[in-house]
Length: 209
Image (cartoon, rainbow, N blue to C red; front, side, top):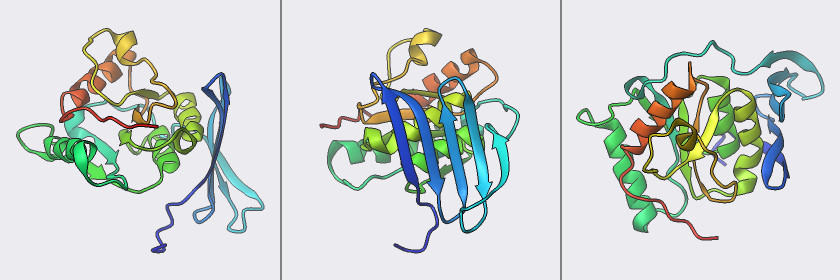
């Protein structure tokens, strides 16, 4: 609408509500993300007319770096419903993350496409993406890409646990509240990052279906 080339065609396939195949195409940058359960995730750069493959790389694009909240670059979307409890929670969380006395993260971004946001985390140049309000068709394809790149999608609302496996447990695909985290150096490091982030959330997101 404004000429920002951050738009995608996103196709996801589930088995028993479990994301299994994902295809995300940005036709303006000619980048194609693909993933199949247990088969890895890939970025294919296409020709400008989208007819030919120029190069193909396995995700993530970079070696795993340490996950640390103050050095993180995150995506947080405002959403279209900018009123009420959910908007207040997002804004208070934004303040907590940006504040020098709290999270003091390196950067916060808002790009607009859930599918491409997930692919950015899978690629490794975005550390995490927190979202509330989108739908399963927005996240399904990118979900597969991220998981096959070694990342995690966990509960977007805080959970009262320090058990690594519970912290990293996947949420319901149709739950509408998600936290996506790139591949870290270990499950323990990732779980600690998630726990630290949960401590920044200023309330609880609640979305109806």
